[in-house]
Image (cartoon, rainbow, N blue to C red; front, side, top):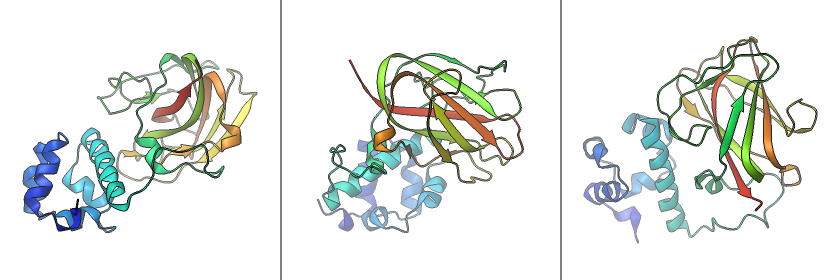
Length: 236
């Protein structure tokens, strides 16, 4: 498959095969061909202009990555023999396997789950909006699962709001924030709703648990507004 030689019509056909036919006109008017799809200069910025819908853009990023991998003959299915730091980004194309049966904000804070539909919401149902602790930072989100999982990592959907976006995250496996697992710093995403790069637990830290507690700290100690998508493996 010589993707680099595709013309715009072939790109449009590929979009149709992946359920993205609603973007035909934009790709045609911008003369997006196979070489453009494979180009390193075809970044998230250009993709957002062509596909403004977050859900559709997540789908597009997945199928584009698969297309590029097929060209480069990358292996994307073996993870256990990797170095202990990060898994490849392709790992995060896998759908969430974790079923969350309860979500709460402990330590006396109230919660709000308002918002529009956004792909891969933390609750797994893909219908709820952002989670908001409605309390000054630090904020806590306790998630309880239907069974034991080994947790590999997570992604965030954040608002691009300097005030309410998390800047630091600590993860625990108990509801009292005593059993610390790992911490992560979050980059600054200003002015736009964004799905973060994956946060991957170091191999030796990947917990086997039926619950996780997230502690979010914001820059100005305001309430955190965020969604979370978990990735893990069932321990049945």
